[in-house]
Image (tube, rainbow, N blue to C red; front, top):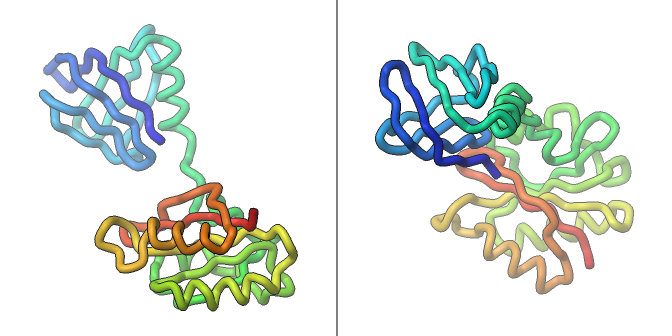
Length: 196
């Protein structure tokens, strides 16, 4: 979840009260500015008195957030976002057993070198497009140690054929509970489940 504040904003020579939103990938300034700055483009971040100051592209920006909030926002901007592998809890010491076709580039990158057979895995990652694929993934997940998590990768948004609500309904009917979610890419989301 991002941060938001109604504050006095200055972008170059224009100053006005506006809502500022700090999301994981961008800073958004609402009307009258209607501007967004990708986090990767923000540089020279500093707190001066009550304000958060930074440069983005050709713009100099100041948000009068108050000293404590400005420091919090600066820290969030300057702290690199965790990798998808980190969000999913996978790595060399925590291999994932993967079921389903890995067609998403971000997911393929996260899993690269971090997947293995069920006997060696600490958790499962299941890429699913329907209930039958989810049931097949759960059958393979049962080979992992009891208490292991399963990340279900599913379509994102209301137009997904087998999205978050369908997955949650199916999993809860089988006794699984969701405990965490993560964006994977523009097209996919991930939800972590465990029994009980």
